[in-house]
Picture 1 (cartoon, rainbow, N blue to C red):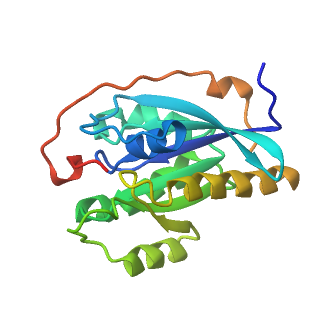
Picture 2: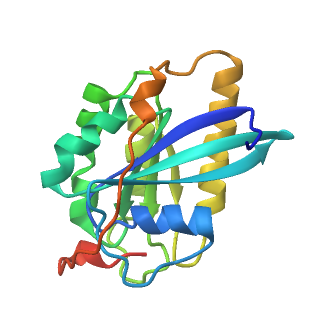
Amino acid sequence: MEDFKFLFKVVLVGNAGVGKTCLVRRFTQGLFPPGQGATIGVDFMIKTVEVDNEKVKLQIWDTAGQERFRSITQSYYRSAHALILVYDISCQPTFDCLPDWLREIEEYASSKVLRVLVGNKIDREDREIPTVVGEDFAARHNMYFLETSAKEAENVERLFMKIAEDLMQQARSKDLPRYDSNTTNISGRTSAVSDNSCCSKLA
């Protein structure tokens, strides 16, 4: 059995096509899957990292962004220690939907959940959302903010390590959300679905 000090559940949410799956796979497997299809329902991967000489296991849940899966994904908010809200810096509609995602977070997640805003796909040249706009939104909603590129592996490791460090500090101060352990015993799967919208250009 693997030895670890802490186990944290991290859930990624956001519109379909913003690159949530690519972020997870880049961090957990060191891969960027070209032509990655849309997630169906929920999937998760696990990676153990070391923080302050202690092992921390991150259970990272990748949720579907499509409206038809919303009732499924909402149940994962309740048991999250951290929520990563992702948008595509090259697709304005994914940013415009952030207030809707925040309303869901506030309704279903613990008030103590760590909230992180991520602008993904900074490798793209057709940026539509300036960095300062993302920074301002995050500041107004008390969220940590970071821009990433799953394709180029930029800031991906930094993102998840920052979350692991912050959650470990919360755990030591006993300020983490408390959950029934049964709420995490759910498995999910991914499947490929084509999407021709601007938000299907995964990175």
